[in-house]
View (cartoon, rainbow, N blue to C red):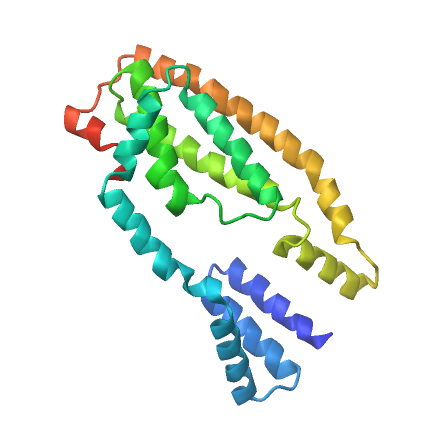
Length: 239
C-alpha cells in the first residue's frame, strides 16, 4: 500500500509542472526505497530497464533519416504527387489521414505516423499543395491553419484509436489500478470495447471538421488576405 506513495509523487510533480522526467525518476526512487530496495539495486534496475528498452534509442536512427530524406526532396515529391490528383482537397486528404491514423492505432501500430515522421515531412506539404491548387498562393493564416489541422488529425487519430488496443499502457494502467485498489477483476478487453463508441464519435466529429476546412479556406481566400511571396509558397511547411 505504501508503494502507492509514488503515485502521489507523480501527481504532485505534475501539478507543480515540474520536469516530467525528473518527476518520474523521483517516483521510481521513492517506490524502490519503500519496497525495501537498496540504492545500488535501484540504480541497477534503472540501468537494466534503459538498456533493455530498444525503443528509447530508436530516435537516434530515425531523426537523421528524416532529415536526409527531407534534404533530398521528400516534401517536393509529396507536393508534386498531390498536384496530379485533381479531385483531392485538403479536407478529404486530412480526413483520410485521420481514418488511417486511428485505424492503425487501434491495431497497436502507434508508431505509424506522428508529427516528426509523417505530419511535418509528408502530410502538411501535401495538404498545402492541395490548397494551392484550389485557392492559389496561400496567405500565412491559411498556411498556419492547414498545418494546425494536419497536426490535429494525427493527435486525435492516435488518442482515440490507441484506447481500442487492449495492450496499450493506459488500459493496462486502468485495469491494474482498479484491480489493486478496489480488489476487482477488470477485463482489459471490456475497457477497450467501451472505447469504440467514443472513437467512432471522434472520427465523425473531427472528420466533419476536416471536410469543413475546405469552406473555411475558401472564405479566407475570398477575403483577400495578402498572399506570401513566391519564395514562401515554394518552401511550404518545411521551414
